[in-house]
Structure formats: structure tokens, C-alpha cells
Amino acid sequence: MKTFWVDRDHDRYRQRVTTGVGLFAEALGDIAPVSFACAAWILAIPPVLDPGYVRWHRRVLTATCSRNPFDGGLTARVELVSPLPAELTANRSWWRDRGWRGWPELFGQFVQPAERDLSRHPHLRATILVEAPLPLDGLPVAPERTDDVEDIAVAAERAVTVLVRDLSDLVGPVLQQLDTDPAIP
Image (tube, rainbow, N blue to C red):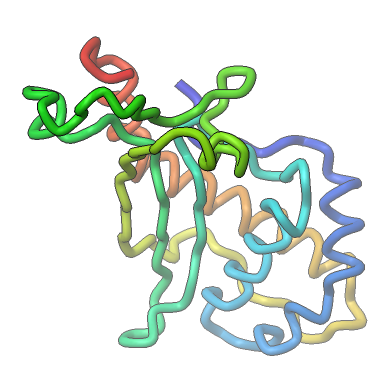
């Protein structure tokens, strides 16, 4: 099962890195790869690049990477579409024929309900929040200068590839369980 993957349209991502090179300014020359990797990730996902250079499983709503202020490490934050907790599905007395709706789907992708739908029906949507440290192994060292755009683009692609691998390793088993459990919509 694909969890996170790279859309191999390098030219589109490289162009975005070139126009967004200022986002890397604070990270350049830093021996820790965290800030550079976070900037590369921001430029690889929606809404900055839409469709994203990084794609993900239909249950992934958001995926961010940030520097942990405690130790300077890399922290992932991934929000997943989830079924309702068992406490809400075992007995539906709370339902009271109000027409509750769950996660809408559009072409197989979970989406937020439209404003029109929210004005007509109550919605109850569950999510799982995964927050975890990611390893720094394999992340490239940030280039030294902003005028070396080609080196920045190559390093950014490498950083995104490593983050995709690590996020897939982290979240893949959770998604596998959600997708193989017959009781989970």
C-alpha cells in the first residue's frame, strides 16, 4: 500500500524551489538538516504546490514537519481520517434521527464537507493525530548560499525523498490497519 510517495515531476518541484528559495534562507549553512528539510517539505505539499510533489494516502488529511523547540529534532504531525470510536457506534441512541453525516468522499478521497452540506446536516468526523519524532538519517546538509539554486533544488528533492520514506514507515502500519479492518468505513 502506498502511504506517501513522490510525484516524479521534478521540473515542477524544482521550479517551486527556485521561486521559493527565500524560504531556505535561515536554514542555509546550518549543520543540522532539520530546518532545511522542513522548508523543502513545505514547498512540496499543498497548498504551496498543488497538486503536491508529495502525494499521500486518501486517509491522510495533513502532514507537516517541524523543528521541535525542545531538542531541535524533527517532528512529524499527521492527521488521519478515522472511523468513529466504538463508544459511538455500539449504541446509536445519541443519533436521534438527526441525519448525522460522516466524512464525505469525492472520487474516493476524504474531503471536508461543503458549507452547503454543513448548513443542512450535522457532521461528526473522527481523526487520529500522529505526532512523532523522525530520524535525521539520510537528510542532506543544507547548502551554504542562496545563489546556488541547483544545489538547493537537489538537496530539497533528497530531503523530501527521505521524509517520504520515514513518514511511510511511521504511518503505514496505522493506515494498513485502518484499511484492512472490515468494520472501518
